[in-house]
Length: 195
Image (tube, rainbow, N blue to C red):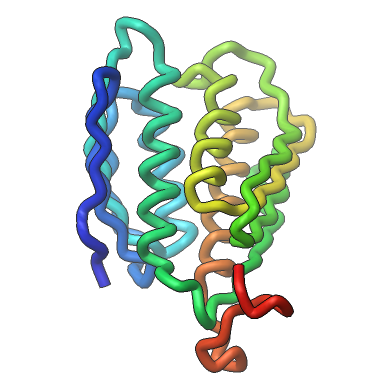
């Protein structure tokens, strides 16, 4: 089911997102940063989320505002789509190889934001994306979904492969975490019975 549109309009950015977490991996990602579009398409495809994003921002200043704000709004969209989070797996993980690159991602939608990001890029840019902003994207997403995210990437020849394996692993991990567990019978997945 498509969720209502989520928007964020500031002096720096304008972002609009529609998300269906029970989708088929269809996406229409439209930001002025082409490599960011490619990476978010990977999240949608590998997580089987239907996702539309229209975003623009003050790239004449820096890419930071746009990349971070897309992470913010995407995290908010998932938070809204998951509602009270009753019956979901809550946690998900995946190990994703991409040729010589290997990434591990684990996520816990725990109401406790935290990011452990262990990935270093050789180059300042991957395509047209400032590589240091990949951290900021995941930090913003996790803070707004209120989730704990651990990402580890191993040495690889290509920064492109390294980044793509991270985003694919993240999409797969999110799919697992967001999926319903029929054994929970609509209960909150916590010994505290609250997240």
